[in-house]
Image (cartoon, rainbow, N blue to C red; front, top):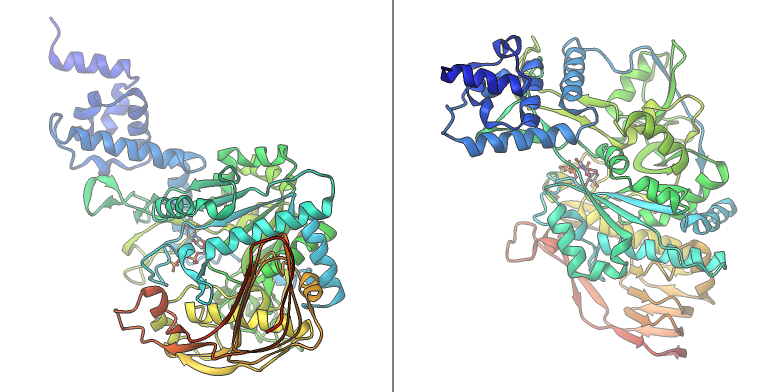
Amino acid sequence: MTSASDSTAEELSKLGINGEWTAKAPPSLQKNLQLLSPDQVELAKMLVDMGQTHLFDHWADPGTDDEEKKAFFSQVTKLDHSYPGGLVSYIKNARELLANSKAGKNPFDGFTPSVPSGEVLKFGEDNFLNFEVEGVKEARRAAFVLVAGGLGERLGYNGIKVALPAETTTWTCFLLQYIESILALQEASNRIARDGCQREIPFAIMTSDDTHTRILQLLESKNYFGMKQSQVTLLKQEKVACLDDNDARLAQDPQNKYRIQTKPHGHGDVHSLLYSSGILDIWHAGGIKWVLFFQDTNGLLFKAIPASLGVSSIRQFHVNSLAVPRRAKEAMGGITRLTHADGRSMVINVEYNQLDPLLRSSGYPDGDANCETGYSPFPGNINQLILELDPYIEELRKTGGAIKEFINPKYKDASRTSFKSSTRLECMMQDYPKTLPPTARVRFTVMDKWLAYAPVKNNPEDAAKVPKGNPYHSATSGEMAIYRANSLILREAGVKVDDPVIQVFNGQEVEVWPRIVWKPKWGLIFSHVKKKVSGSCSITQKSSMVIDGNGIFIHSLSLDGTLLVKSSDEAEVKVEGKVQNKGWAMEKVDYKDTSVPEEIRIRGFRINKLEQLEATHNESGKFSLKP
Ligand code: UTP
């Protein structure tokens, strides 16, 4: 006769569980093992071996909460699969980083900073134009990756950030702007190649549980904004387990004791996701040479893309970080070469709060200071990267896409033994070069800030509190930056554009330039703009102008009001003469006025369309617009 416990022991031994292991497992888990599949038992063993028995302390006897127990293991399976090396690696890495943090170890100990080499470009100069042309040529061998998994807590917008209008003259949302820019690059690049082959630029978007469904819905509802659905790949990042203490005990979800609490791991996940999805090999087989990474709310970025891709190509950069001139102490990471006494060397972003102490401790007594140019010698990182695909794949084959992580626990007191709330490992996409050998060509390209960088990250209240001299990074400043850049580009092309006026919206003092907007296919690079603007043109500050069509040519136009011109790809439209009307006025809106849509409120103004001249040519042929 066999007893019940004998049969359980038999079952367990079939699952490979022996007495030695069961002795380590808490009784609450032992009793429930029979509910688990062999794979789940393996995971249970792993959790016990990794000191996570507390997760089972409250488990009810079999028959109670059984579905919840299975759901717990589904979650553990997911956490295990989505981290390079699984949960064992995650817990080990966490213990190491937590120990370093407790000991107050500086991750840059032993490293000496110096200024790395790179390319510094000025908009409109000859080499800028040459790099732009090269960039357009290379674009058909590029793939774009948008990291869009972030919650955007600082902005506090109710929708997803990529659905937010970049500007409200045309109400173009970020995602539409990005897709139109990629399609314009694709078209121009295929045109230059003249090999009859219409290549399609792949576009991957990293989403998360916080953004995935809404990004997919946005794309589907807008028919992928004109891009082929087959060009777009969504890759969803998973969150990582939270940690309760310095032993890296996984935190239970406060809402459900049968779940582990999770939080976002950061945009560094993009590398492991691209690798594990197999998409890099597909791109490689399809002739892709470059991968361009960018973020969700920079309405200027694509003005900087052609030239910086051109730099990557001509200078043969394996890693090219886009950067802008940075003033000392500005809240922006600096791109720095770090050389270790043991011979290690890397070019990497150093966060601004780490740069000053690092410099002071390495023979720069003034720390983070400006040099004779009036700027810090360390270029300001804007977190847009261009990687050459071959060496990228080679590196990921070694690392699996794992990026050096960091941890930022908020300790309860100076003993650094307990946390105010659970913490987790995080990683950043710009830390990719940390594992590269010193032979890798890791460089940067500096662009004018007005051309390249104006992200929308902060809500109006926080933006208004930004210390003077620092950028607001709000919806207001992001929109104004687009008008400013377009005005400055037209000025450079010879148009007399009036100076801006200073206005205050939502407590932020901004320059208001004429509201000039064009579709990417009209003015993809500066030489395109120059070809399309001729004669003596002028635009007053109160004006707005929207150009939507590749074949629109502006000749001796004097604009004082609003002009909207739209044409099909087959039409050529010449716009000339004097346009004068009441135009579109900007009216202040109070952020707190909840009767106003959020997209408008967060800017602090709305556009009142008083009067405009509008011309549309959908048919092919040559047209002239002479008011
Ligand atoms: P941000 O620094 O803007 O962070 O991310 P965030 O999480 O979106 O916003 P806050 O900090 O909560 O206010 C920079 C870029 O990285 C993406 C964001 O979507 C943005 O494009 N990101 C961030 C991810 O894709 N995943 C993450 O886990 C975090």
